[in-house]
Image: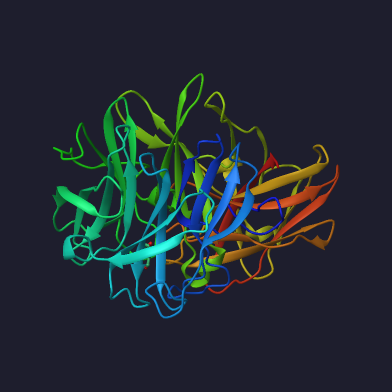
Length: 431
Ligand code: GLA
């Protein structure tokens, strides 16, 4: 969902990474896409700090545009990944460094003595002289670091080890040819590497997969789905994969981007537990969960469900309500121009997150907006519904609200064209 920093600003940290610093805090780096409707501008790499993954303090932009260079405001700086170089006591940031039409296809490097910057741009170059677009950096337990990058015009994915200062590639380790994969990331679980990736389709979510190997040089297994086929990793694309070594358990967290291509600045983030069951990995889909970063123990948040079939729900016109076997509560609302789904909230007062359970079978990168009123007053913002493109798994669209006991809540589709949105119900989480 969209997230807010402690100063009230919207978190802008897309395509980034989250690392634990020596002070025990977590730092999240990512692309600032404020106000962007398309790519082609470098605004900055932002940094946020947290101890609990729930509240994030903005540390500002740690890498800013430098006019007349390869990181000018007309350039592309994507997928920034920061790692710490122990020997040099230095933080090194790698990123996809490009011209606004993705023609330069290089990597860029910037360094800082302190984790939250400012980072000094060292340069941009083509690894081994080859093009590079989507990429990640992985630092192994033995401090060897790797660049994993899409090359050969995105056809190939290559793993290369880095030099010990992390300023350059050193040796190619493994290459997949003719695959068109993007968005790589690594978990290391019980000594086995799990390489996550998405298929290439611009900003449109695709299914994400993983492969495993006991060495970065391979051999790598075949690809395995990370989430059910056709859910497109719950409409996300892998950004970074974080391991939290708690006192009670090791927790694996998937950080995905939920890109909004027509309105890139409104793209949001999806953090999901990645569940390792002893032999494989899968995303745990949930509308809300909580983590104790000390112990590594996580749990789903409890929620109340109000379905279209509930006694407290009113659907107008009544002809918009349909029987639906397999739906939450067995009914769904066909939201078109003017139809409304209202319900009375009989639970406790306070800040909540409404999570709309919806199916919207639009095209690629088609979006709809649901406006919410509470006691006839419009709530700030909208619930953004991305086309589920025929998937059978219900997606959830969150929107924060403040409810009183007995509040009347009303949902309305704000931008009906020709494809209806089906809403089966609302899950209500404590904020
Ligand atoms: C994919 C990549 C992003 C970005 C877009 C541009 O989604 O993963 O980093 O390059 O394509 O279309």
